[in-house]
Image (cartoon, rainbow, N blue to C red):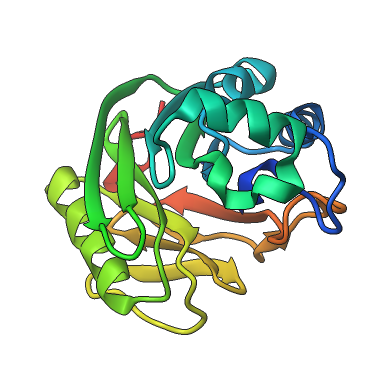
Length: 225
């Protein structure tokens, strides 16, 4: 069984070059049109995940990251002047799931200074899928891997996201694929079955969406329903 994992940093819902307007509909349309089972999203405007899930036929879990004080005020400013407020509009990371029932959601802080950063994960069947936006820090990457492995116990794990690192390894995990600083790692569950796909998102974000095709290994073959 193939599992398509998409990871994408949304740049707080902005484009390159800047568009000077809210791009929620454009991001929704792009995500809805691509083929994936699980989307690991970073730098998402905090008010987007529920509507993104609705538009893409998925369920969602999200965690707030940094710059979320007075979020209502930030939302008004970021929606009207996204390229002026930039990341100060607030941020979150989100996991969207198109197939399978989310039976658990966990989160752990991996950095508080200079920015609040978290790893979070959902459980689908017998597989855990974790999402992170870490700083350019191998320590944060290792903490993310350790937290994901602890939540999963003996179960398989997929850990993906924007690590802000190009070449690195995580103990106990295999690198399944990536592009630039966006990566997917696996432990005990899967191996890549096709080349990594870098999708065309046009001007949306400054990170291209990355898709890694995975297939469960051995007795895990039916663990994502």
